[in-house]
Image (cartoon, rainbow, N blue to C red; front, side):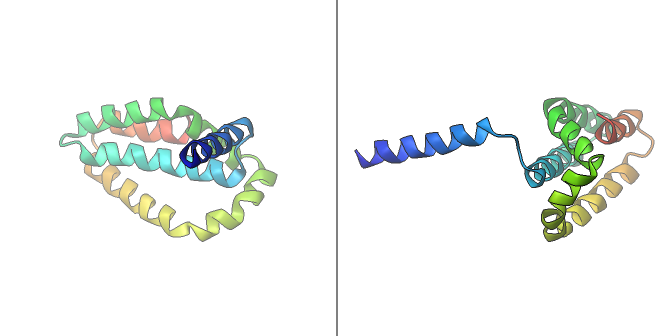
Length: 123
């Protein structure tokens, strides 16, 4: 009986969280994660042509997270609301920026990787 009550409570919490709009901090976190997943896909590929295709697939799969993060960047009030979260997680962005630079440098001559990075900036 206790297990059923616990599962019901967890289900209720999950259901309620899906009924509300994500907070600016949640949008920033999802956007960061989408960028990270795209970079991971590129890093794992042995060839740059494969990296570009893998990154573009991740971008397509997480397009809404990219779009929401871009919209957050353009909304001063909501971005201000996310500032505390962004400042607390700044090291994540620095690490990701360095990894993006390394991948960009490794695959500088590949049009599909350049296109993927462009899509990340403007989904």
